Image (cartoon, rainbow, N blue to C red; front, side):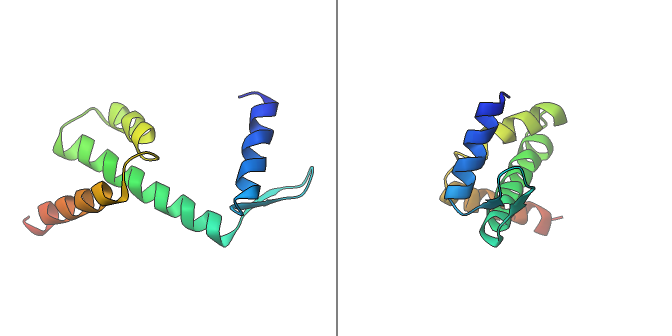
Length: 92
């Protein structure tokens, strides 16, 4: 990734109050940024689990596909997926 792309991404995240960045200083997630990172990580985990454990997709492909989908899938679909996966573990 080019330096200008990184700088643009940092600027956007700072504008959204997701991180704190002083010029030439370290980057620090805000509480809002930490919450968003946690939400995305959980979406990724659920998607990867579904692809790999339910559909039998190779773990590396499941990871890559989860990365591609996690930012775009609707909250309603994620909720249903979470409920579906929970029902599978409840039935074991």
